Image 1 (spheres, rainbow, N blue to C red):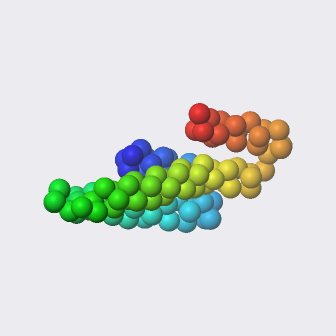
Image 2: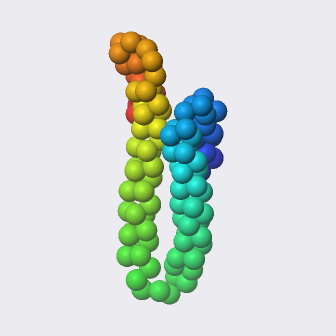
Length: 108
């Protein structure tokens, strides 16, 4: 998942680099994804190391729920980056809608 999101962010950086706001949004996204998945990786190895810990299942369930929620928020953020840049383009609204629809195919 990390490399998939990183590749999308780098693609957005390359496409929308002249737009200063989008550039900063992409850089923030790259930093957020890196910190998020590094933390997930460390917690996965550190959480429940010993199977003798009785509260391990509850901690793991909470970890999975938090991880899922943050991944959903991150996916929504990835969808919003190009839409913000497309909204500022100088083109007719119908064409903007068509270009936005291409990016919204990521919801499928």
